Amino acid sequence: MTRPARRVAVRRWRDPRLLAGVVLVVGATVLGARVVVEADDTVEYWSVSHEVRAGETVDRDDLVVARVRLDGASADAYVRASEELPGELGTLRWTDDLDRGSLVAHEAWATGGESRGHLPVSVQTGFLPADLGAGDVVDIWVGPGPGEPTDVPAARFASGLRVLDAGESETLGASVTRTVVLDLGSETLRGEQVAAIAAGHVTLVRVP
Image (cartoon, one colour):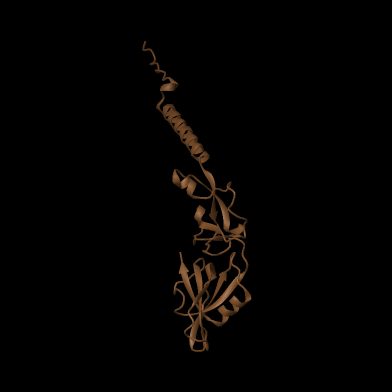
């Protein structure tokens, strides 16, 4: 009489499918742990929520928190959301043009000090930098205006003023001019100085 064949029992821990499942679980656990560790290394920094231009006032709506991981010198080059700002919002101005999503570097904004007002000056084309833009810093030189003696030398009336608006070219009579708006910052101009700037021939000199 022939005995029925007996099946050889396969121990479950040697089952290739079980081993593959264990490997997948272990791998997923290690990967998940690594992701968690890297997430814990991220730090909150300020970034800009939209494009900003040099010379514009820094508003709260300009800023958004971004969690990023930076190493070495880069970690100290940008402003963390936990840091105290160098001045109150509304008194800070952007010193650089930034695209949306850019991190804010420490030198990307600065306080303009106590502003004593804005000064609009009318400047003829050719007597200011052709590429003058918001955020540039200029000195105001004033020479003799129409009808005044031409032998009077030009004088510097103010220095280190930041451009708020570089204006658009306009044709006035025979000349093309631009009305440039300057932030006086801590500079104080007397009434006669303002009158002389308005009546004289203005030249704007960009300074570092």
